[in-house]
Amino acid sequence: MTRTKQSVTPKVRCAVYTRKSTDEGLDMEFNTLDAQREACEAYIASQKAEGWFLVPDRYDDGGFSGGNLERPALKRLLADIDAGRVNVVVVYKIDRLTRSLLDFAKLVEAFDRRQVTFASVTQSFNTTTSMGRLTLNVLLSFAQFEREISAERIRDKFAASKRKGMWMGGHVPLGYEVRERKLVILPGEAETVRFIFRRFLEGGSATLLVKELAEAGAVGKNGKPMDKGYLYRILANRLYLGEIVMGEEVFPGEHAAIIDRTTWEGVRTVLESNTPRRNNNRVQSPALLKGIVRCRHCDRAMSPTFTRKAGRMYRYYTCQNACKNGHDACPMRTVAAGEIEAVVTQQVRTMLRSPEMVVKTWQANEDVSERDVAEALRRLDPVWEELFPVEQQRLVQLLIARVEVEKGGVKVHLRAEGLDTLARELDDLWNAKEEAA
Image 1 (spheres, rainbow, N blue to C red):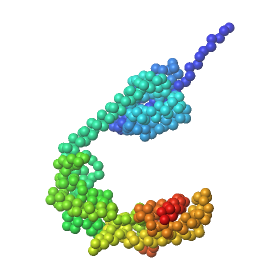
Image 2 (tube, one colour; image 1 turned 90 degrees about the vertical axis):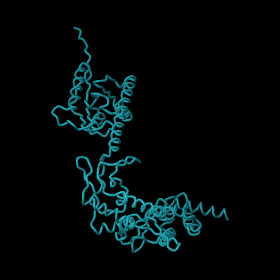
Image 3 (tube, rainbow, N blue to C red; image 1 turned 120 degrees about the vertical axis):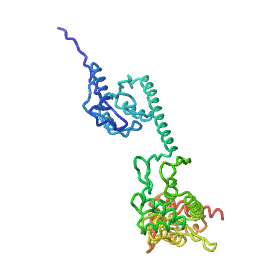
Image 4 (cartoon, one colour; image 1 turned 180 degrees about the vertical axis):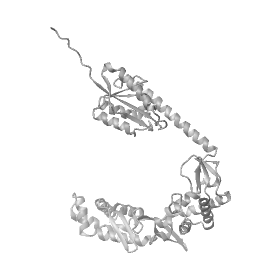
């Protein structure tokens, strides 16, 4: 008796992926995700003859955008694909999977790596064929185009609302609260804002104003004491004039003003007169230790500043805590730049001449002898004084990781990896000096 040989249809494990951009309506008994899944399950059932069957795990992303891949259910699905648990991914529509061409390319690469295909209920695709890939790319291009059009519509609506003077969200400024999506004046905070504008107009000093506000116990919207940066943001905010800003355009706002225009213009004049002085402090001051010197009391950076008296310039490094919160906030406040730079330079020269430092540098570069390293480091003294300030600063930044300053003294932390480079550069500088002679 002859037996008929029957072919066995291979089992194809199918996973359904669903997504909705917002979480609106997800608490309903039958929501959008359920509708997508029902359609996908019916599609899988229609392919039963091909061996398709539904895996029990659900991959539902409710309230997640299709503009990126940061979705928990999608990540679980990709992990199961890598583990070999899924053969086909079924979606209701391609843009449920992603709306980005770049992300789509990443997903296709991940699918191909595990020989996984995916199907759409409303668009029949097979990603293993070149025609299927072409069709997918075209459809995804339209999906991305639709997404960009939607974004443009939102931006246009946002701009139109601002032109009407509507406040469109963001950080609520000091002096206001939000009621029914509109800014409403808070009397107590508004009085603090008026005080800030009035006192700055009278004194012109944000440093003194910070101190005065701290003594009065005034705090910002975040409940913390105000520093100079916070004050400058208040003084530059046109919301207090009753206006709404969109780019470089200004429109009358729906909310009430806290500051009158005369006060606003007066503060602008004071700020403009102060600006050149602050900019010159940054541009004209030579600063050997810029970016590496810190106040050890406050653990804050110290910035180069200067003052002029009787036509003479005096340079300093000032603690940022003192800059933002007034000099009383830091026990040290400032240090004379020339003195601290001389102390640091002398410490570095002394350390470089020590046998321990020579050995460390030599161990970092065994291509040269210990004697050559010692000779190169010894040349720092005669070469240093002939360098331009910018060259001195570069060598200091190369060698020093951090300089900590406190009332009791100075602590220098060397950058170990910079010793070898420094030795080579000093050797080059010395050779150039000898050739010039």
